[in-house]
Length: 379
Ligand SMILES: NC(=O)c1ccc[n+]([C@@H]2O[C@H](COP(=O)([O-])OP(=O)(O)OC[C@H]3O[C@@H](n4cnc5c(N)ncnc54)[C@H](O)[C@@H]3O)[C@@H](O)[C@H]2O)c1
Image (cartoon, rainbow, N blue to C red; front, side, top):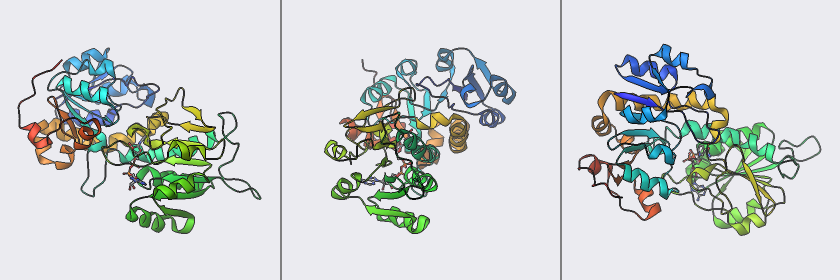
């Protein structure tokens, strides 16, 4: 297979789809890899390292999209990239289609095979390609939140860990899954008082078992959230309903009851955000203020620590990239239900139920889509 790695073009995105060692694995399995020049530079990976691993370096994304059988990326394809996708071409990357109708429609029209990292599953019921980035985003959240609590970005001037004689900040984490647990770990390590809210009793039990009494756990109800947000200095949104838009757990009225200068870090913004006042921001302009509350809603938080994130992502994606390249799309998909769960759009059809439901569009199962001819191209 010919595999292409374009340079990421999203604002301040410095990660890259494949590391040189992943390229070397693919080359050793008999595949060819094209890497856009300087694609890895933001993660400290030079063209020379890719050449040593066996890749060919090309100058333009156009050449990659024109020639590659499979594109391996990090973030969703932006409009200029979507316009280059070809029918039958595989794109393997984060897509986050549920909150993004325009992208969904354009991927359907492209007739490409679009496999979303975030909906690939694991036998234990987890999301193995989301996990490493959720770990990174979760660990970053208290770090950026602590900065936002400083006066300059509009925060209330509170030090997360307090000092002897002055109480530590109250950190409330909505969602005690991967990112929420990692956020709690770092917030606790920075000396904050930490409470985690989840609707899954098993998640709450796991947190209590993991942290002991160091972290308070609360069952998620509307009234519990309405009460607890009033106490927050730093509110971290870390909920997920897989494939679906994030539930709006924090209403605008609740935000109005928060302490002036409190901070919301909405990690779940890539699925639309779990606060009604959240809207996507970028690393170059990460925060805005609503009703006196500082909002940090960067959709690609791990891009800030690109090198750590690129290696963590590759550790998780490489086995699936190898399976697709070695076996081909249909054999790899029929051999592995978990990879098949990653299929979001194929040959003009949505194959992920939550994405279709989010947009009120039709869908068919991945199994059916892989065995039926492509839809006639529309528009
Ligand atoms: N912004 C970024 O850069 C970035 C990076 C990585 C991940 N993310 C996003 O972070 C979000 C969380 O990812 P994750 O891997 O931690 O998910 P996860 O599945 O591990 O955890 C989500 C948790 O949310 C809980 N939950 C769902 N509905 C709830 C509700 N109504 N009330 C309380 N809890 C509820 C679930 O029970 C689960 O424990 C996702 O949207 C993911 O895409 C964002």
